[in-house]
Each structure stands twice: as structure tokens, then as C-alpha cells.
Image (cartoon, rainbow, N blue to C red; front, side, top):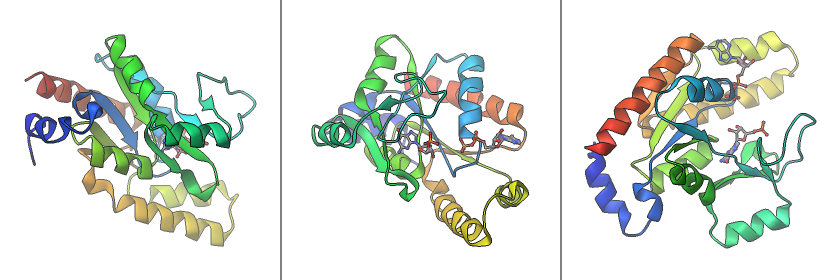
Length: 208
Ligand code: ADP
Ligand code: 5GP
């Protein structure tokens, strides 16, 4: 694997974000990303600042605009996309809704001396891996078979939907080797501690 210094040199000319430090958590739906984010922010000695994603989906009752998401109309999302304001964006889960990370979220974190923490789907993470190979990308996965157990235990989906979700999870799992690290979210506290260690180690490598 190339060193962080080499990666920075390769990509810095064409991409202003190539030298910026940020952390990406991704992985299949249900792997625990949303649960992990606040715990990591609370416990990691590196100052992590949650990136507030933009989305075209409607707010849920408890959600606060600007804190949970930047809620945009489809037109506004498309306009910003055409203007090159997104670091990454994707139509997630074939829901018809778009989600994306505004570049301004990453610079906002940097400007206050922190490091943006992105929680995004695997399509978005693939774009980041291609454009910003120095970013710390972590693939969060459940222990073998756990996803299927949780899905079946919930008992809310038909067998057809279960099979379709499992197929999506298999496709997403196949992308795991492209990430810098993979962390198994077995015991929550252990997984968060492992990620915190990885982030601290990466910060030291970036400083070298
Ligand atoms: P994601 O954001 O990746 O879709 P969530 O954070 O919503 O996943 O987690 C999915 C479910 O799994 C939630 O009910 C959450 O409480 C549970 N969960 C998360 N981490 C663990 C863990 N280590 N052990 C058991 N259950 C977990
Ligand atoms: P929800 O609608 O349940 O909040 O999120 C649905 C999915 O969108 C999750 O899998 C989440 O990881 C993904 N997501 C949230 N924000 C972003 C983003 O900025 N970019 C991408 N690519 N996916 C996102």
C-alpha cells in the first residue's frame, strides 16, 4: 500500500480535498454506524465533528434541520450537485432519495481545528476512496450471520424483502477490501475503542 505522503502527492494537484483530514464510516445498513457516531465523538481524543449530510428525503418527526440533515428540495440538490458543491453523493437504497456530503461540511470542521466524521453509504464511500485516497475510511460490519439474524428476529419483512436485503448486503460486503480498515461491530464498546485507536494512529501518520 502507498504511504499517506505518496498518496497526497499523487492526488493533490487535481483535488483540493486530497490533503484534508476526514474520517468516513460506512458499511451495510444495520451494521451500527448511527449508533457508533455519537460514541466515537464523545470518546475519541481526536476532535471529530459530525458532517451534516444533505438529503432530498422528508424530515422525520424528531429531526432538526441543519443538525440531523440539511433537507433540500430535489431541485436545490440537483443545482448544488451541478455546481460541484458535493464531495460525494448518491441515490441511496433505490429509495429515489439523494444523499450527499457538501464540501463545506469538511472545510467547516477543518476551520475550527477539527476533523469531519462522515457517516455515508457504500456508494458514497466508493467516490471518496477514488478521489481522496488519504481519507481514513472504515468499513463497519456485523459479525458473520448477525445481520440475517437481526433481520429475521425483527419479523417485519417478507422472505422476498429479506432475500433482497441480504443480496444488497453481500454486494456491499464485497467492497470492504477497498477501505483502509474494517471493524467488526460485535461488542459496541470494543468496536468504538478500536476505531478511536485507528483514528489516533492515522492522525500521527498524517503528521509524519
Ligand atoms: P446503521 O446506522 O448502520 O444502519 P444502526 O446504528 O441503526 O445501524 O444499528 C442497527 C441496530 O443494531 C440498532 O437497533 C442498534 O441499536 C443495534 N446495534 C448497534 N450496534 C450493536 C452491537 N454492537 N450489538 C448489538 N446491537 C447493536
Ligand atoms: P436515513 O434516511 O435512514 O437517515 O439514511 C439512509 C442511508 O443514507 C444510510 O445508509 C446512510 O448511511 C445514508 N447516508 C446518510 N447521509 C449520507 C451522505 O451524505 N452520503 C451518502 N452517500 N449516504 C448517506
